[in-house]
Length: 401
Image 1 (cartoon, rainbow, N blue to C red):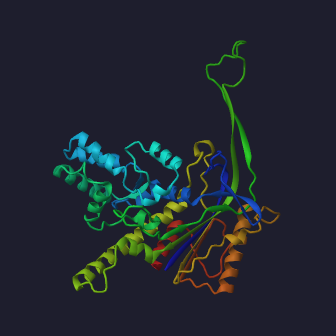
Image 2: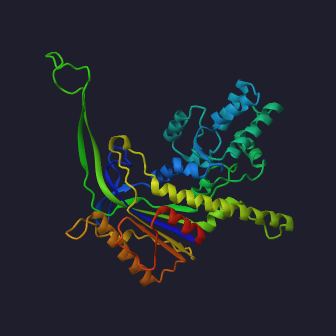
């Protein structure tokens, strides 16, 4: 079962997601340059948002970091391990996640990676649960107590961590997945796909020339009347189309853990069945939290400068019985634009609703539930249940699953 979420969100002047030069990210779509917000930026803003954290309160969430050596070191010291021994353990852990592929890299690349690794960080950034960190700490503590830590290779230590058993994953890892080049942590296929948000309209970059005046500057002949600093910042204003596709069954399976083999005993299969039931409850909680956070959260880039806090103007949620994801981005191949009958937002909504209805008819797109929320009462989508509030939409979606 797929849950697909489509949003139209018009932002005032902003620079929510910058490239390496500080300019708002962009792309070419339909032969026209558009403003863009990367999927990574959108996912991170949702995952770390106060709303998502609050909605998932009481449920363990993961942490994405290269600082596992530092975390384990602190845990070992708190458990009574000598600081010098904990330091040796941290240096061993810093080599976790490295693979044979690294040996094939050029010497310059390897030298650069080694220089960036200060002994307290892993070469690879990892998405870790607290149980993952506990398992590593347990292995290192045992090696220290046995006096084998110095002689144990990083590979041997990682294998021992695998022996600590298959650890459950957290809802955020179940949503966004993870890939780690270490058998110590199992890879997880993401159950949520997030598209780069693109503007429905043609993008035009603009520049804000700004000055900073020294409050103590007296304008005397020595100092002059000029500003203490001048600069410029690039920005634009755009109406974005956002698209999310969640494999709800995949989310449940990720949370439930590894399915037992066919030859498994009745007790093991019964245990997995209960795990599935518990996972389904957490999956419902996760979906509610995700939708709410996606609606109310935007990336934080330059928000202290622009404060572009505009909520979505339209949201369509579709529950599909078959895993056939459909993005409606092509509704905006011809850019939206204000005209005599509609402003930019309304024109975007009208293009969107017409395209949704066309694709539904042409491709016979089945959906067990279709929910529509809009700030404009005169734009509807055929076959969709109109929701008056966001809470109504989330409640209806939850019941549909």
